[in-house]
Length: 230
Image 1 (cartoon, rainbow, N blue to C red):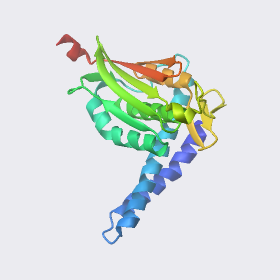
Image 2: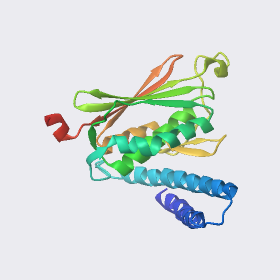
Image 3: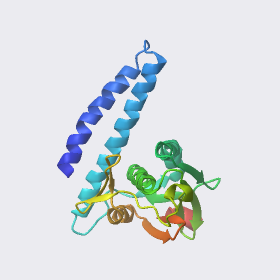
């Protein structure tokens, strides 16, 4: 799987580099620029997805499930600023809405910025795959003692579920790490592996099912030590 992830990422990285070189030209029409930007976005999305799969395999094959990256103080404000728009775009593409409630000032947390970015994006990808069109996702950040709590509330649209109490997406398991959605061809990490990734990043993921009300995913991240002492 690591070899496959590498083989997929390498040509995508080449395509993205060439696309970005083209975007520097001054003689492109607005329509061409728009299409090139879409290519860039899709390449980045798949590079990150397969990069995350690569790191997940690395973690799962490590005997003692050690941290997969050096952990340090990071700014969640920056993580959200860089990603909220594309998370909302992912939700929109799947017929969903996503809104975010953040405190005025987010504290620093202990994790790895690049990996946390990818794992959160992977989680958003999974959540949007698990929801029927017309549903709504709410992300809220709050303080919880010496931790920051990120909570995803998934609320399906009852009308699109044909009166069923629970909508079940067509997800199939591939081996011990991946889930596959035949309708879209999307690959995502399964829940067990995702939990292990958050643990390796210094956090914890808890999933709670609510009958007829959707799913709640809660992530706890430790606050940076100096913040706690203050």
